[in-house]
Image 1 (spheres, rainbow, N blue to C red):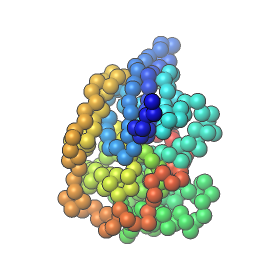
Image 2: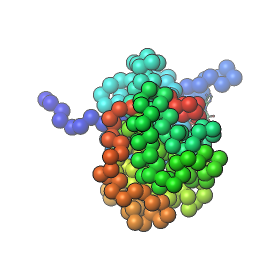
Image 3: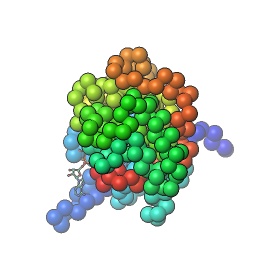
Image 4: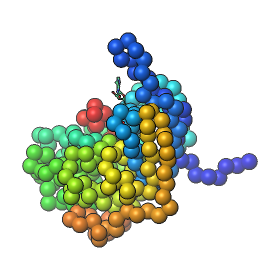
Length: 276
Ligand code: ADP
């Protein structure tokens, strides 16, 4: 029988993670099975210490599981060597962390261009992509500002543009609004939904934010290294662009000559991206 169902973007099977701590083995992930579809929006919630960040790092191939498989579009990446993994990350994933890890001595546009420059993509092409994305996140008036000259919310929007600049299929975000005030967080949440709609990028977000979780069509609850509940809501209650308040995403973003989803690479090996 031929299976005609589309491949999930990523499927993890039987993931466990153990750490040695002062000679004792502790099991942080205790058998995680999870499937994420192309273009999905989901968040992972749960008490501190439940293993959310560890799972996110494993999904991002920044850390290896003790056992289990991670299968992206049918390919088992747990069999990849480190060079092949780095290449896979570059092509497929973008990362956003609570602390943005922007390079302080570079401007906003240079920070966004950086993942491409590192990979040898022509400066002019990266400049164009970065400019379009910064426009899309409402920062076209801040291109030449350095991170220290930007607000926390603006810095995080630059980090989001940087995560998207290599046209990843999946953006993995760990507490992306954990460091922002509630109004700025709200604008950031709306922006993420807008980017999901306009670019088709899948977002998987670890968050403590009840406000963000309430907007998500899918909420995975983790407790003590296991998935306790995988909650799906029928309707997508994401805020409409006009309800987003202060964040001016460029008009016509959906058809803009911005990133085509999954065309080339992700920013997995950005300086700072893998060290968080
Ligand atoms: P969460 O993101 O849900 O708060 P984490 O995934 O960060 O949880 O951590 C889960 C548990 O794993 C925590 O108790 C943490 O102390 C432990 N842990 C994480 N990384 C390591 C490590 N490298 N060595 C030992 N224990 C670790």
